[in-house]
Image 1 (spheres, rainbow, N blue to C red):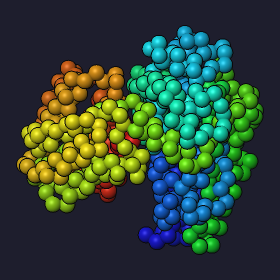
Image 2 (image 1 turned 180 degrees about the vertical axis):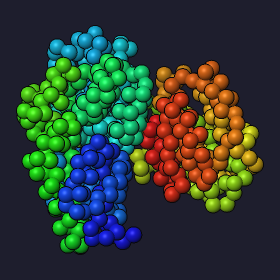
Image 3 (image 1 turned 135 degrees about the horizontal axis):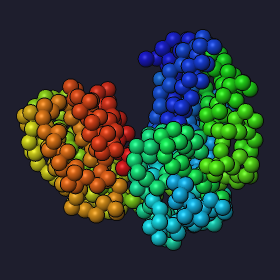
Image 4 (image 1 turned 90 degrees about the vertical axis):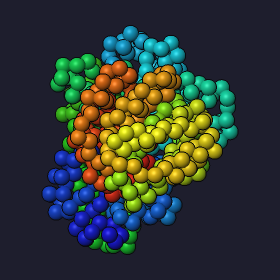
Amino acid sequence: MGAGGKDGNTLRILSGSENQELEEIINACAKETGISIEMDYKGSVDIMEELKGGAPDYDGVWPASSMWISMGDEQHLVKHAESVYMTPVVFGIRESLAMELGFTDTDVSVRDILTSIEKKEMSFCMTSATQSNSGASAYMGFLYALMGKQEGMTAEDLDDPALQENIKELLDGVERSSGSSDWLKELFLNGNYDAMVNYECLIIDANQQLEEEGKEPLYVVYPYDGLSIADSPLGYVEHKDEKKEEAFLKVQEYLLSDEVQKEIEATGRRIRVNQIEEENKGVFRKDWGIDTEKILSPIQMPDGEVLLKALNVYQTTLRKPSFTVYCLDFSGSMSGEGEEQLKEAMSQILIQENAAKNLLQASEGEVNTVIFFDDTILGVETARDDSDEALAELNKKVEDFSIGGGTDIYIAAAKALEIASQYDLENYTPAVILMTDGQSTENFQVFQDAWDVFGEDVPVFSITFGDADPTQLEELAQLTGGRVFDGTEDLTEAFRSVKGYN
């Protein structure tokens, strides 16, 4: 594909996942303007990296926050960037729990939330700060609040041992992580969790679904000392194509028109921070804790260098350690190209110099195990510790491993649960990452039995390749609260995406 979309009448827009909720409005925009719009949803760090590389395949960029454009647009290609809507990053806490904690009738600070986590009164779900804007924004808010200021963060501030200890304790409260804000909402709706950190608009959407199902809604808490607001800028990526620019400006003008802005507001997104159209007031419900009259004082994001240091410190030092079991398909059908791609993908995660490029480095205290399987367990290897050297040794074992025979995903996944059961998983963010190119004809029951015995909250994330059967993998994802990723186009990209979930 040349620069940008395929033809003058097609716009390809690189977007954050939270905009999936606006697809009806985007489709109406395409119909009204006669311009075909292709949305490609990615995490914030991926959007930043794409911009650093010049975003040759895209005509527009629509991240959750301007900071990803300012950090990624080193070539100064983004023009005409305008905020389409705003949404604060908030805590949505089960209403009865929020009342119990005394959060429904008073202003709440980040330290109040930290205290409830230290007392084991609450845990929460949050996206990875190094993969998704809602997680990054919440984390930056935590840092500022626990530093006792709202702007002017320096690189030295991040080295403060007392601050690091506080943030570690706060992040110990993370029960499940995710690489996507929209998927986090789906995880929450399908699970049984206390709270989640997410965009106000996605909490509103979750509450509408919870209410439809007759379930308890979430109460929105705005930490007054660590609040950040996503400003959702839509910008044009300059590739010297006047027709594209014209088409982009038409689309942007449509989305910013008064009528469409009201429609966007009706989805729970703010058009102005403290003022809601009369017809949309019923969306922003006070009984859910939503306050559109409160004067919101958002934190000021630090400059790019400090922000990047903060994200690296989160990834390597502060977050809850990952516990990951990789189940790697070494069956006969993987021979050749499949084997090469698998080994290359694993080197992007295990070799820390590679992992650092995508902010996917190992964290202190994390555990990494690899199960090699065909239709039997061919071998199990665990990195001796979290050091770069130990992970490089594990990568060497993957590199040197040889292909076997048939395929049975279930015995490998069951073995992974057995291994996980030997650890206190409360201290980790656990995941089984299963990569396969085959289909298993039997033995789902073997996995089901293992899940019944060992299955604490250990999600199975699967990556498809070759002839893998997505329906079998979806079944595993549904049972365990995991997700299926498509590795048929780019296996390395799929491994990177899934790693953002733990």
